[in-house]
View 1 (tube, rainbow, N blue to C red):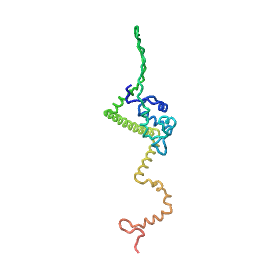
View 2 (cartoon, helix red, strand yellow):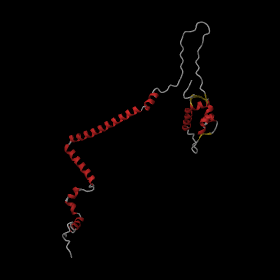
View 3 (cartoon, rainbow, N blue to C red):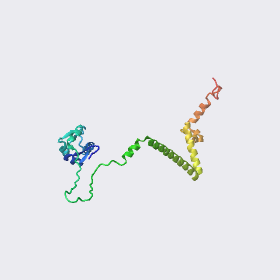
View 4 (cartoon, one colour):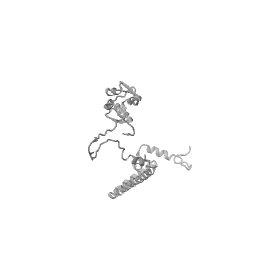
Length: 225
C-alpha cells in the first residue's frame, strides 16, 4: 500500500506496548508519550528523562532514557508495512471457472468533509457572510431585550397603575439625588419639627444671626463697642 503519510510496521515488543500493528512515526511517538504520561514514568526531578517499566525496557533495553532520544530509538522498531496478499487459485487445465472473486482490503479513507471544510475556512467571502449574520443576530437580540423591557413596563402599569407610578417616581427621585450629590441628605426628616429641637440648633441659630450680611450692613447683635 502507498500510505500517505508513510506508515510502518511496529516490532513485536513495541506492538505489545501500544497495541498497534501499523501506524505513522508521529502517531507512534505520540502514543508512547501518552503511555509514559498514563503510567507516570516521567522523572519528577528531571522532566527530560523518563523511567522504563518492564514493557518499555523490552523495547529500549534501558532503565531510563531521554525524551530527545525517543525518535531515534524507535527507528529500529519500525519496518516497512507488509504487502497485501490476495490468494487466488489458477486452474492450469480444463475450462477456467467463469466466476468473480471479492476481496476485503482495509485502507485509510480521508475524512469526507475535510476538503469542504478546508475550502470553507479559506473562503474569505464566506467569512464576511458569517460576520454579517452575526451582526444581524446581535441586533435582533438587542431588539428582543428592548421589547421585553417595554412589555414589563406596560404590564406592571396595567396591573397596578397607582403603585407603579409611585414606585417609578420614587426611583427617579432617588436617581436625581444621586446625580445631584444629595443622596446623603434626608429632606423629609429635615422638614419635621423634631429636627430643630436637637441640642446644636440653638447655637447654630445664634451664629447665623450674628453673621455679617453680604451687603455690608451690620446684622442684629453686631454693633460696635
